[in-house]
Image (cartoon, rainbow, N blue to C red; front, side):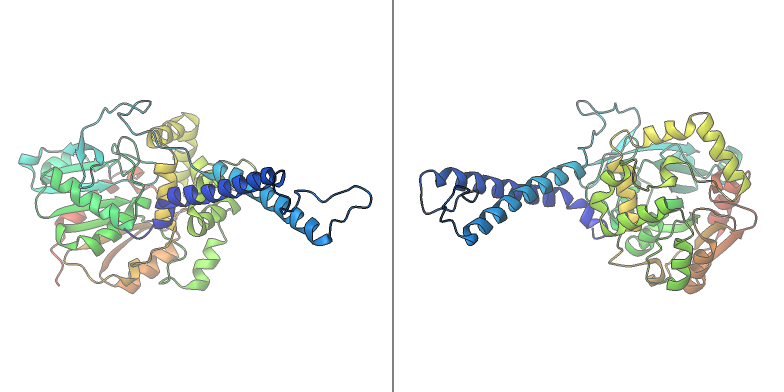
Length: 405
């Protein structure tokens, strides 16, 4: 589990740092006390009486000691301030109740899921769905029940780690996203091979599945997969230009997620700092349907109710770990490093996407070559809201012949 490691190890770093600060404070208090018994220790403050024989060196040492104490106090306060609150897992004292069916992962965590389509025993195809940012197990590509019945599709969507009713995973990474899907499929007995559909930010699980569990997939479809502007395989000048077109808050959010993921919780909670418009829903979309749905979701309360459900175990364990994984460092691989997998891959992208720049998506698909790229004219980011598109995505995925090696 490599990507997101800095965020995952933050608890240990906090403990070490705070312990060191406290040790420094204890040492200083001990020195100040011992000065009353040991004449050889420098006084904590230089003597001010007339005719004092204190040397400038002793005074300088005292000032340095006081500065160290002040710095220790400030650093200790800061480290405590930026430490995220502990999660509130479902089913634990003080945590939300467990209301959904759940299955156990290899590390003991539980993932919550929701089924749709036909029953498993009748299914010709088994499809796993990985939701996007602020989503959950009730999301899907929105294929019609008629199509699912006709094709014989069993579909299971799940709360990704830390979302909804799935247990948090402090070791979350790009790889763990693929491993969770594999564990879910095994726990539900989906067979040796199954299809995978990923949406938006949840598509990092799709890229990870190509890398880590290619032998388990029969096909993959990604719906407007989110892009990390710092991927090495992107054209630097173009990526930088498009990155700077974002609002200052979105630029800073991605910057913090990349350079200091341990600071995200504190940063995002400060009203005086520029933060993500995606999280607060304040940024307008260039696509008319996306903008209409954004305004409606804000006005009827759906936007905030979905966010509360997604983050009920802690916003750190859902939104901010998502950001740290997706927009942090990808040390083991990037999408453009991947080799052609033994199954078909489809990528659907709107040309009016206000979240994912279509220019960068085109570059990735051109560079890979084996991705079946479907650019949708006049379409925005939220593809599942487009009437009939869910049917097209599912039928395209399931009708594709196996990829040649």
